[in-house]
Image 1: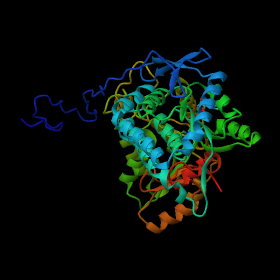
Image 2: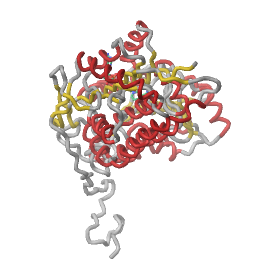
Image 3: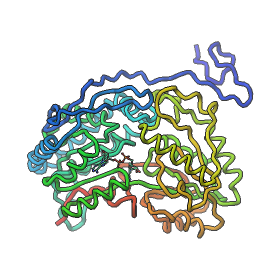
Image 4: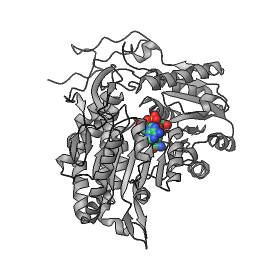
Length: 501
Ligand code: NAD
């Protein structure tokens, strides 16, 4: 018997065709991989799971249901001391290990991430609210790819910097945000340990679960004790790590505001630092672009992860001659997005990560309307009924926005796009660069020469042409200006984890 296709309306279980204008209803398709979560999670220090000396815990919540998933250890001063001491003790031996041996450990980590990928994806989605298709198809495979890629560098480091000899820096304090918890962990830990450093990593307080599962993987592959240490906690735990006298380097990914504070603190201590911060990245769409392709790239780039992407293309600059058809198509595509249960494989837009982030987004939605911009939002019927509990924001955009508007200047970090227009390429460049940030940009045009000219003149660390949000471990990622400094990924990313002599 053949499996009836969803379009086959003669099949017995086929859904009835909806009336005109009414969206299709899909059956629920939840990801059912069982995931066990301990009620109370410990810190991972010196190769062991240990109770926090602070004796404090805080809950981590599923933002789609508001249910507590686990109590998380809140690392205090003695816990950070213990983690840094374990990393310090392990570092000389780890650095002296034959590079081929180090590579084997990093490679085994990558393999275990692949083997446990379903579980990691489900956990990431439950803890962070992102759709399972994002965590399953993007976050977890890219995290594994990062370890594979850096395993390859371990025994080739001596050739990576022509005429110079790389040496490990020592103990790295690494602090990450909540939008890509496992992937940001991979961006930090893989290059650090591949280069012979040891790590103390602090995950974000709202998404610590995959980092703790990663600690289990470190044990499974018998990574030497102390090479990786995971200290959970909030901003205070992060501050303790940044200010710890025995840390040699800080790598921070997060908001520009916290990044500034950390930069001051590291400057006072003359400590090495890399910062990956916020953004307000522009898309520039020329009249010769393929409109459908551009609409798809823009919709995926801003809405598919609830806009919780540092390089989300959140400012759209569209050439005036195609403004009307472009906005029409954008609205049409936006209305086809499904918002809801992040564990459902059909979901495009999941839950906002926390109540606090939802409040921030709602504040900007009010500000945009007060400033006089025209507000377009997915209708309640278009998006599907939102669950009663949880933190939700239906995808939306503002048109008739001026460059001076707050919503055009500040990072919203939600599924909110602002649309502006331009007449000439010069005006497009001026408007795109009119921001204190400089993380990423998208250019949509049919003309090769125009692509190169735009790529040369846009002030952003990453520029995608006729596509958006494509990542690869071999390709460096990072920002300009208030989006930070230093690169992660590729040969450039290694530079942040070695001393050169
Ligand atoms: P955040 O700055 O509030 O927190 C990030 C991390 O820093 C968390 O682990 C937090 O506990 C910790 N922290 C907070 N205050 C601290 C302090 N004073 N000292 C040390 N640590 C401290 O950011 P967030 O809200 O978790 O993440 C969202 C931000 O991250 C957005 O601005 C986004 O653009 C940015 N981001 C950037 C990149 C990039 O590659 N450039 C990637 C992901 C996210």
